[in-house]
Length: 164
Image (spheres, rainbow, N blue to C red):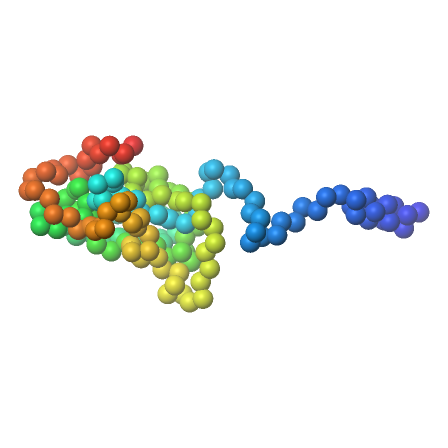
């Protein structure tokens, strides 16, 4: 009797539609709240949003973020604040993709995107540097640093058009 129940279960599943997706060609849509690869954002004028405050590194429970700040000058301006992130690194082997860095950032400079295809062949490849994380300037050939007139940016968190 049990063997008949087993065959019935097998034949029932043979008639169902398969749930397997052919991965590279077909991808299952992700939840909009999915937290994937990190991105460092820029303002519309090309300046970096990161002001080098290191609040993201302080909020990271896995100690995966390292930020080294440097001072902006009027000749070379990287961000609208007094400081900018000279070095920004995330060790993706340590990151647990919790999003605390995104929540702690006062300028919304770090965001977790939807990219999920992260693979490494070497431990050094798992350390994402600022150059790997930062967005390219939109419609501009040059990135930061920028030449600005002295005294224009006096607040560490400026009132920029796309700041939230």
